[in-house]
Image 1: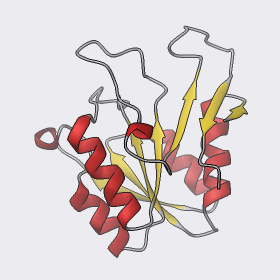
Image 2: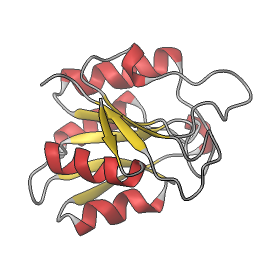
Image 3: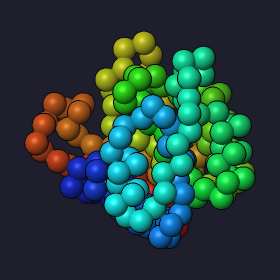
Amino acid sequence: MVVTAGSSAGFVLAFLALLEHGDAFGLPSPGYPCYRQILKALGLRPHLIETSGQGRWMPTAVDVERLAADGAAGLLLASPNNPTGTMTRGPRLAELAKACERHKLWLISDEIYHGLEYDGPAETALQHSDTAIVVNSFSKYFSMTGWRIGWLVVPEA
């Protein structure tokens, strides 16, 4: 576990640790705009994955296949997602995690809204992958606006 100055610092640290200048990283769209701005500021390329209501506003294993074919380095998944509020659970989360592992893509799971879901518990990507990186923070769940403490759960390597 790595403690950070909020979740944004966690994303910066994760991107800097995993990626080389110019690398592309998959982001669901719609999604939190800061992800792509952080990537751009670091000299990285956001690779937007257009999602739809039919797919619950989440990427699919086919999207991961396309990311791999396009040479992207990984996928950022937020569940619950900002701004759609949708979650990826069970078989679909497992399918995405396994597709990332199969193609040697990094999976970064934004889990800062865990605990703020109402139609069932959110699942962590760590239930399906030993190599996923989880980003979380105290500010949302504990209503600690202005108190920026975040953390990363990272694989040993």
